[in-house]
Length: 82
Image 1 (spheres, rainbow, N blue to C red):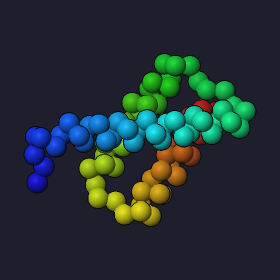
Image 2 (cartoon, rainbow, N blue to C red; image 1 turned 120 degrees about the vertical axis):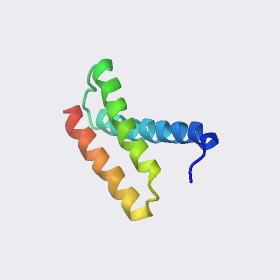
Image 3 (spheres, rainbow, N blue to C red; image 1 turned 90 degrees about the vertical axis):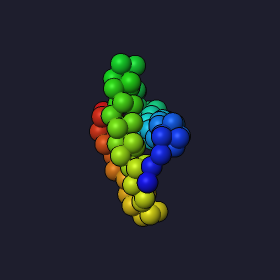
């Protein structure tokens, strides 16, 4: 059962996951010679990634499920950057 005391940590954890996923995708994209979209589009992608990470951090996922989710996120962000 979730308590109100754990809620702030959940928000911080999901925000850090979203930031890490977006940073990895952006870093790989720029290292491969691509250009990033405008800051407004990056902010929108961060918000969408935050929604997905909030859902993912509410579930107890095993390592293969989490790796699959991160891989799918990288593919989606790769397509969004191009």
